[in-house]
Length: 252
Image 1: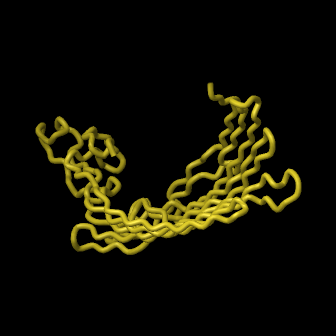
Image 2: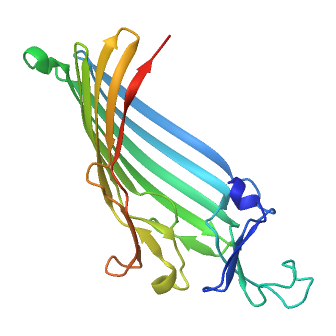
């Protein structure tokens, strides 16, 4: 959040706005309640369920239009520049409440024959509800608080046999709002669309303290889509390339 405090200005001549930090921001504070239950199987398996509740006071929202218009004159704080531009900055909005459930599962398939015993199945799923009371009068319901992901899941296979290791994971992130307004929903409500990415890795232990590795992330080159109000109104598309990383790691 350091960038949200620094008062440096970034003008946008097309939108006639100046994005800047807000040195008057208060720190947001959270009160947490967590409960977790775990069960371990005798054959190298585990399942867990977690529930939590978090209340955030002085919640810091994303930078948004403040309604403050830069005045004319050399003493306007910008050396007489950006007259009529609107200031965009982050503010303390109010109180946000989060309630979530998380399920986690891991099982080594020791019942399989031969080298297949080295396979492990793993997965987790997170469900999140968020609510907000901003400005003392505005109540945001579940799915309307910007920046919080309501659904996320991971599913993967891990393999270990002798000196070899491998993994394959699928990661899912559900749609969530990046900016939300009750007053102008058609033009100010921006959402990041669902995204699913796949990653894989291979490892080989050359020596007891040295391992060669190969990592491939975002195999399908899935990028992020931003839409306005409804998926039929695309706003931005970000191209995300596949990443290949290889090398040798060791402990000495």
